[in-house]
Length: 491
Image (cartoon, rainbow, N blue to C red; front, side, top):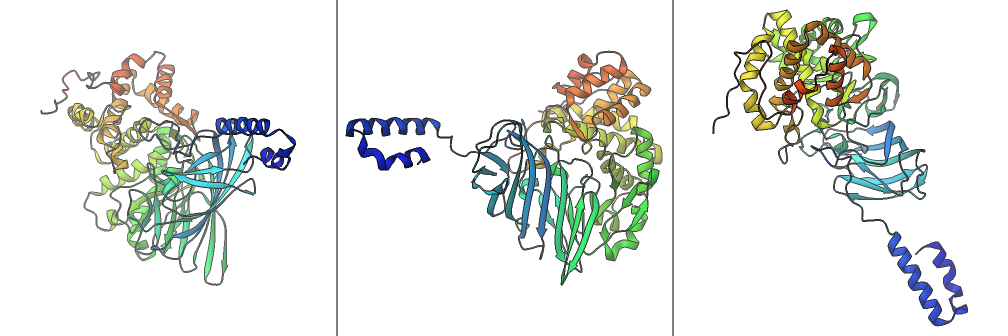
């Protein structure tokens, strides 16, 4: 009952009975009209993941504490975030699931909370005015036990993270969409015989009794899907990359010597990429080789995740493994530093990473880029029929969220870039690539931004040319290759 009605109720005998009834009835109508709608999942309206992200605020920073005991037990955790409201907030949502929430504070005051779908709905004691900074602290668990498409991934002796595309909120509460990037601090407590590594730079380590707390902090904003915390019996060899860049790799301690053949290549890969697109955009880099079976490799920011067996039990030639390492490295520019504004823009991530993967294979192993693009062209119509056009991919298969990562956004996306280079020439294309990563560094950008910049750099509007390449049901004719034919999808 509102405070004003509770205060007036002892005085009700001063009014005539009929008048009192009218006052109470009118008050009830006002209260009913002002009642907020029932808690419900919210999102920013992403076409592929409509419930991800949250309206009404932008997150500036996360400070996340985990207490790890074993990889088959929930971690006790506290997620603190600082955000700025973009409208008045009587309540707000955080993306979070697969954990138990014990309490929530907003600006130091206990807040009410409930769940709605995969959202945590928070009602603070005081409404948050528009345009103000506020803090949220959520005391919760983070559960690695259930096999799921993303989130915590158990290894032989610990855990790593694989949050792409929509699994960050299985690990910690927040705004789990790449358009809402923020700075991160991780504070991870684990048995002292284990090593903990996370995104960014080390910012402290303290051992008390049988446990050690490790602190890491990013210097650049990061999307939740790129967060990485690795816990296990790791070795962390360090070396120096281009321009003195710190390179630190994370490998199973028992495999350090065997994996050195591969980790030692990272400085060379960094130098090659910098010659193509400019300086590395973050504070450090390295590869994380985990004793886990994921079925994929992942560009977590500053620390790309790989399956150890890819290198210890190689089923592929050396040039191919190096090109995959370059693929994930290229994502540090394309996807991590410049993040997609919407998930429909994922071709900008995967198309570019595939482009530099193929270009590296051409320069280092003689695998012609043109041959790969010709093969992609032949399959492109089938890819579009199966998965939609590159910049408007079909939604994920139910229960398989990562199914948006189809060939049409990988080689299909690279094929768009090849067509553009054929049209505007290699020098203009190379300028476009450099300006793209420098102009949108530490930010987000979408397909329309890329099309606009292509026109600006080439001196000619490219929208009419690129529109069918990006959104058409059929693959357009390839400039310079009138003989290339796209195979029709069989009935």
